[in-house]
Each structure stands twice: as structure tokens, then as C-alpha cells.
Length: 275
Image (cartoon, rainbow, N blue to C red; front, side, top):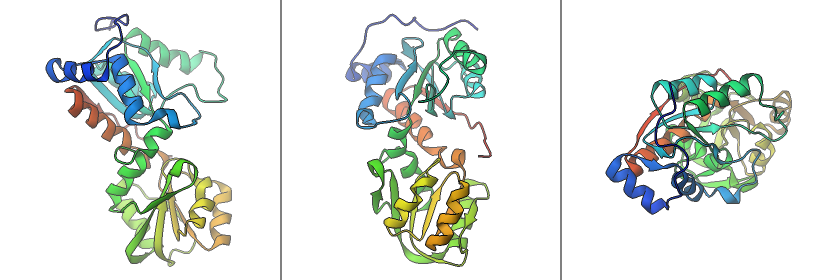
């Protein structure tokens, strides 16, 4: 399939012009969308491990967006099949400390995006943190938890004082039902939880911050060997609910927001991952 659209040489539009185009013509200007998202997600305030925003430049007009947690080859091929003009993800490319050579799987992924004129938009910490569209906010809504406050760097960690204390095991079962996977619980399953804290993804090293914030149980995606010892010795519980599983919701919310705002098409691709 050849690249679609009008090419990449069009001039930049303002977010206001992009909104008009999306409402009337079912498309949004690529560069205006980049600027709009930078403002909505407050990208400039984060010191991140990767660039946030437009990572790969595709066609100038965007009428369809595919969203996914990660810019895997499967996600790219799904976007191609959907004739999408952009792929919107939480985990993009160009991570700090990575080998920068464009070889192997990296070359294949980038080649597919460029060949088909698909722009790649990626938002890491800004998408975790957004108060409405972010991963932490979406996970809280899914689990029925009110956001009572934050902790840790950039306030990424969030906590909720349960109106009715529950056992750690009962909370683990609730998370399992909502996410559709069995989480790993360390610590005393019978412990009564008054305050639960969470941060999606690989935030296991925020456990000490969560303890300092008064949490009885901390939920994140992944777990490290050291996490078990800290939880046991501190007398708290830790729930590893899956990196992918806890971060499926922010990018969907963001894609739905863009579809409503600009009148463009959006579909989420769940490239299932057991981690």
C-alpha cells in the first residue's frame, strides 16, 4: 500500500484552524494536532525518558487514528489495515539509553510507518499524569476509586481513602475482575486496607513513596524482586496488576477525545501482553 493523503509539506495550522477542519471535513492537520496535544497534556512540564509528541512524521492530514499501548509492529500493521493516518501510543520510540541504530525490528517498524505515511504520536509521563485522560485517572474510574491526592515526582502516584475498609485479598479480586487478569499480591492478604494508592506501568519503585503517603496497599503494573522484601518488611501490600493491563485506558480515552473534538475516526488495538 502506498502512502496516502496530501504529503508532509503543508504549512502549520493553529489548533483553532485544526478544530474547524476536523468539524467540517473530518480531518485534522498533523502539526496542529501535535501542538494541540502538547497543550492538553502539558508536555513541557515533564522531564521524561523519551520525546513526547510527534515522533515520526507522516501525511499532513489525519482523518483516522489507531491507538495502542505500544508502537509494536502488530499495532503498525493494524493501523495500515485500518487505513489510519496516525498511530497514537503511550510507549513510542527513542528511549534514553537505547541503541540509536536503525536496524532489525527498529528499521522494520520505522520503514512501515514511513512507507505508508503514518504519523506516530507518543505520550509517556504526560499521559500517565493527566487528571482526566491519563492512565492513573482512567484506572481509578475503572476501579471506582476517588482521587484524594498525589505523591511522588510530578504527583504521579495517587491515593484514595476507602469509605469502607477492605482486605487486601478483596481488593485484589476486584482488580482482577475489572482488568480481566489475575494480579500478583505480595504481603498479608488478610491485611485491612484503609488507604489504597496506585501508579500504572512500571512504578514498583514508588512503593516507598506510597508508604510515606500512608498507603496500606499500592497497585502498579510490574513487580521486582526487591519489591517483595520492601512490602513485607514495611508491613504493607503490593499488587502487580500488569504493565499493559493498567495502561490500556489512557490512550483509548485520548483517542476518543480527539475523535469527539475533531470529528476524526478512532479505533483502539489491544496488542495483548502478559506483562
